View 1 (cartoon, rainbow, N blue to C red):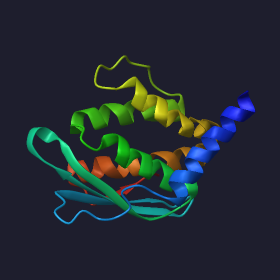
View 2: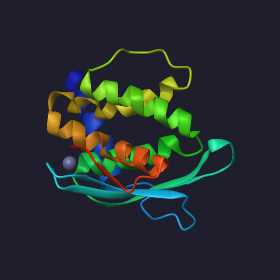
View 3: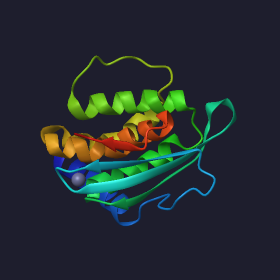
Length: 155
Ligand code: ZN
């Protein structure tokens, strides 16, 4: 059973890694940021367009990196599209906890359990600190783009 689960997870990661969603730029972006993870060589740019009500109307990424970093970025764009900036922050908070095992698990009304469930495919990185940086790079970069910083490093 565990092996089957691991294989399923592997498949999801490979799928997103090979066919990343929203792999493009956003022409009328309201923000963007560069993210890099020197430990692995991952480099990406996250674009986003935040509109009325702090809603993320469009989000995308370009760049190159390992399967984990690309898959994580791809999943992130799908998950935060249409959400508010606050909801995106809350989801990242929970995802980060999932990856590192740090911090207190909070019951956050802003977080959809289904979204969190989708991200569990990446939680296997917990055993590998370098991979945690790969998995969270896109999210750190999204935060930087939201905050108007141009660069983000996962170091
Ligand atoms: Zn990586």
